Image 1: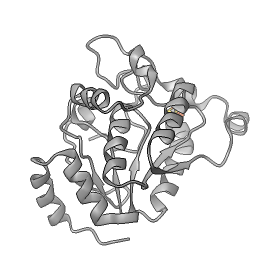
Image 2: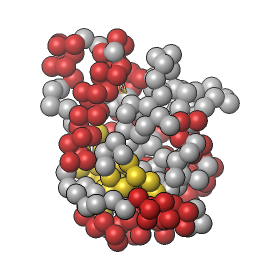
Image 3: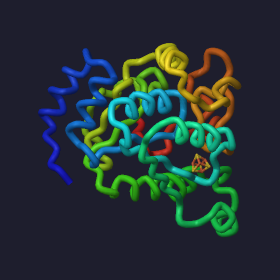
Image 4: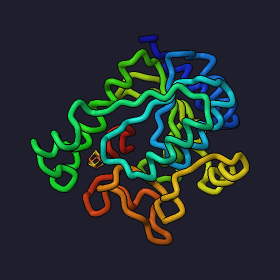
Length: 232
Ligand code: SF4
């Protein structure tokens, strides 16, 4: 694991405020080579980012977490993205199938979402992070929720001891969708049915007009993030 120079990250954070997502992605991929990967759940932000990443560096690493609870529509967009783009997609899944898991614990997404996320998302994420990574890239945006409002375009991820790049942190949803349409990027059809943010099927609901884009995630369960990205 490369040593992280926090002062340099701070300086780059200021510099990156004026740079385009593509400039930041190019910098990140040039600097970290095969030791950086893009974390994707194939939402609108992520498919736009994959389009940029694959154009800048064909064959770049992308990873995803397959909890076993994804929507069929999410599997469909993953298939279409894999067909269209030259990316190295690495999938990390829990060691137990959903059947084995539910035989042991029941439906934890109803009774203990933190434990369910811990087993089905965070443990596979830890394996992804341990897989030769010094840095990761995300599609996080500041306007997604109040917990993401202070996201910097480059920051030290203290939880995982990685450098974290958030190249579209200052984009709006309008900019993301304009990019998707201009570049003909495949996207999850659930976005057309009032699902601005899409996670596991049992924990994702459509949102009403004017609601926070992530309001449909763990709605009524007192949870806003699964642990991949800290609540700030
Ligand atoms: S989002 Fe829901 S179903 Fe998915 S891992 Fe977390 S609690 Fe389980």
